[in-house]
Image 1 (tube, helix red, strand yellow):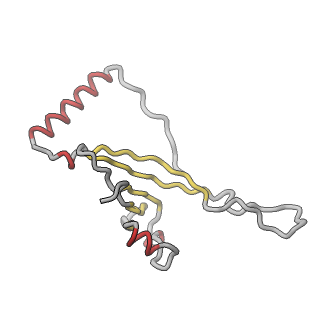
Image 2: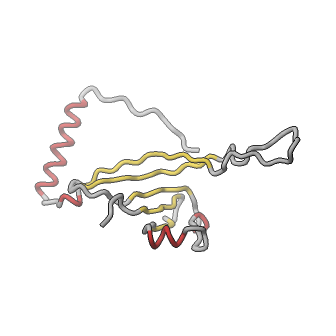
Length: 140
């Protein structure tokens, strides 16, 4: 499970800090003629899901029934972004996993639909994360 910590306190001079950041941003864009599609605002959020269907499986009349998947919570990080020109960028779903075994196999159900029709791209990063790059939220 991910470890969560409280955010840092807002500095007393927050208005000055944000003003300086905005001025620096504007100066960099104008000084270097940065195209709007290359100015990106992005954010990430943790997503939690249950792998099981929370259905009990046991013979009728059992005294104790274990719920399948009850303790198997999974999380991933979803990275989203939009450019200054208004283009929604590819979503990235970032999962934990050290080896290529963390990726779905080509024989997985709906793998072909995901990769060809929906244009998902699965990539092993070579470290503790696996990225599933999802298509843009709009049609071309």
